[in-house]
Amino acid sequence: MTEIVFTVEEDPSGGFVAHAAGAAIHTQGDTIDELREAVCDAVKCHFEDSQRPRLIWLHYVRDEVIAA
Image 1 (cartoon, rainbow, N blue to C red):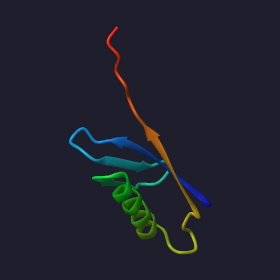
Image 2: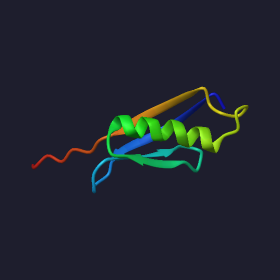
Image 3: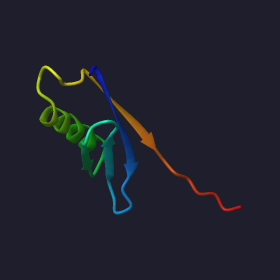
Image 4: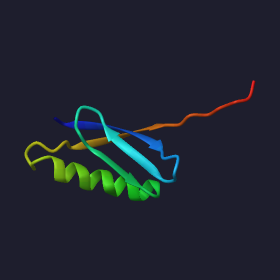
């Protein structure tokens, strides 16, 4: 695996959560910077050095509600 993709969403209770596609990795952070660090740490913990993805993609999902 050379890449891994995380879906990032705002947590209703504050901060951000990230879930990896194709791997059982979930993490969170109070800020985007904290989330980036948590994602990197989670990937390092989840994969052996030889299997670790070289690139981590963060896909930000943001919902917006507009009154009609």
